[in-house]
Image 1 (cartoon, rainbow, N blue to C red):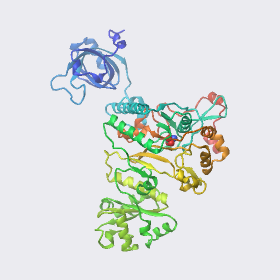
Image 2 (tube, rainbow, N blue to C red; image 1 turned 135 degrees about the horizontal axis):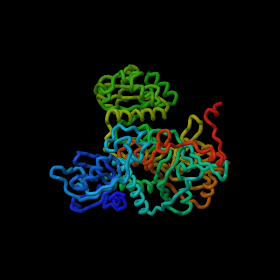
Image 3 (cartoon, protein in one colour; image 1 turned 120 degrees about the vertical axis):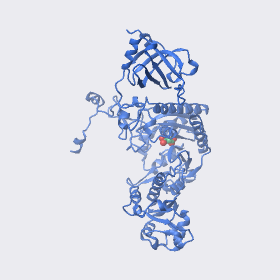
Image 4 (cartoon, protein in one colour; image 1 turned 30 degrees about the horizontal axis):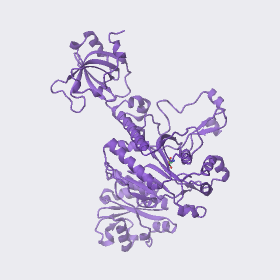
Length: 611
Ligand code: ASP
C-alpha cells in the first residue's frame, strides 16, 4: 500500500474547475483526469480536468518526495488522479485570463493514481476530424470532451426548465407504459414478444397519444411527460428510432391555450438557457399559404425568396411545357433569386447543368429560368432567357411583377403537379439560400402553422391517410364533408416551426365516439379493425370524455437548435447511427437460441426467405 493510499478514499475538496484566488494558501484535494501534460523533466505541469473545468497542477521535486516525483514521469493523458497540495497564485506573467482557474495553480505535495487509461483512440483536447464511427464506438470518451459535457448539461437544464414551468402551470407529470399496443403516428412499430402469451407482441409506443387522451377522460385536466417514443422508419438524417418528446395534453381548451403555453415555455427556455429574449406571440401561417409561398409545411422564414403562383400569368403563353402541365391540372410556380442573374451561368441552368440537375433530384422534370437583365419597363420586361420568344410582353411583365424580380435577379420556374412543384421549389429555395449565404444564423424565426388538412392522399397505396394522426379533430364546420369530400376537410391541428424545422405539433382531439368512428371509417379503417385496435379508446370516449387537445415537442431537435449543432446525434448521450445501430454496444444483435425458443420465435434467415 502506497503512502498516498489515503488520497484514494478521502473526499475531494471541490471540483478542479472551481479553484479560485480565494483558495490561495489552502491545502486542498482534487480528483480528475490528466489532460495536456507538459513534462519539462525537472517540472511537470498537468491540467487536471473534471466536468467543471480544469486546474493547473504543478509537480516539482523540490516540493515533494523526489522519489514520488520520479514516478510522475509515467503519468499519461486520461489517467485518473488524486492530487493534494496548496493553492498558490501563478507566477507573474503566467496567468491565463481565458479560464476561471487561470490565476491559480496547485503546488502538489502528494498524488495518487486512481486509475490508468489506455492511449485513447482520439485526443480529447484536440478534437479534429474524428470520424463519427469512432466517436460513437467510444462514446464515453466523446462525452468526456468539454463540448459534449456542455451539451448534456444544457439538455439537463432544458429538462429542469420544462419541469419547473409545467409544474408551475398546474400540469401533472404521469408516466405511460412502454410495453403496450400500437399507437399509430405514421411509422412502423418496434415489437416486443411476450413470453407468457406466445405469439403475442407488445408494441413500443410511437407516442403516448392514446394514454394521454385517456388521462383526460380520467379527469387529470393537464398532463405532461418527458418521454421516449419509438418509431421504426427509414432513418433520414437527423432522425432517431428512439427519441424524446415533451408530451402534453389539456382538457377544455382551444388552440389558443396551446399557443400561449408553448410560447411561454420557449421564451423561458431561451432566456434561461441562452440569455436570449425571443419575441412572442409567434406569427401564424395557414398550411396552404406555407405550401404555396415556401413549398414546405415547415418554412424557414429567416430569408425571403417567396414562391409565387404564376399559372394564370402564363396560361395564354405558347410555351408547350407550361401549356400541357396547366391543361393536365398542374401549376406553374416560381421565385426570384436575389442577385442570381450574375451568380448562375447558362451552363448551370442547361439540362445537364448543376442547378438543373439539383431540381431534377428534388423531383422536377425541368427548370425554366429568366434573367432580369434590365429594368422592368425595358423591352420584354427586362427579362432574358432561352425561352423568352414563347411569351408575350404582357406575360413577361406579369412574370416579372408577380415574382418581384429586381434587376440582376434570376427567376426560377417549375411546372408540375401542385404537390411536386411546391416540394421542388421549396427545396430549391432552401438550397439556394444556403449556397448564396442568405441565412442569418443568429436569427430565430418561430412560426405556428395552422389549418392543416385532415388527410392526405397516398398515391402508392391509393388511399387517404391522416395528415397528423387519426385522433385529430376535424374543424367543426367541415364535419359534414367527412364522408362526401374528405380531401377538403381541415383539421384543428397546429405545428410549431423554428428556422425551417418542425419542433412540435399537436391538435384538438376527437372527444366523441361517434365522430371518431366516422373518421376511422372515412380513412378506411373498418368497424371490426377499429374495435380490435382501438376498443379501449372508443370505450373511453363513450364515458364522458371532455373536449381536449395537446401537443408534443421534439426535445432532441430543440436541443440541436438551441446549441446550434447540425446533428441530432450530438445532443443525445447514446444515439444510434443512420442504420439504427448502436456502435457502443453492438446492437441490434442476434440472441441466444434458448431465448428465442422461450419466446416461441423462429428466425427465418434472409437467404432462406429468398429461396
Ligand atoms: N402524438 C403526437 C406526436 O407524437 C403529438 C400530439 O398530437 O400531441 O406527434
